[in-house]
View 1 (cartoon, rainbow, N blue to C red):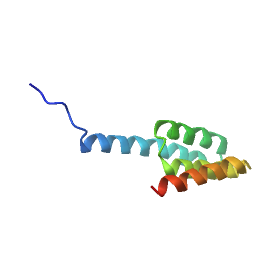
View 2 (cartoon, rainbow, N blue to C red):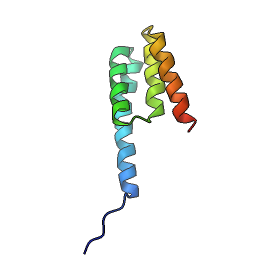
View 3 (cartoon, rainbow, N blue to C red):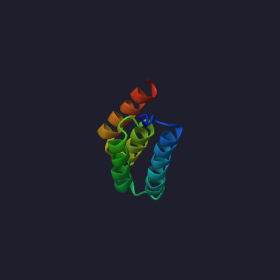
Length: 85
């Protein structure tokens, strides 16, 4: 009889690799001043992993570049809360 599989290190590694893959295109959009697309990409990363503090921080930066200061402030506050856990 097989025992239920425990979450292994490899699952954690796969999840971190997925986040890294998602991060690269977002950073590319941010660096190319495609801030609207960057906001969309960071939002998708947050949808997939709601406690992803760096995505909130980066989306806040992109919002700031778009002049959407209220949203920027909210995202930076959320990132700070998540990093303080």
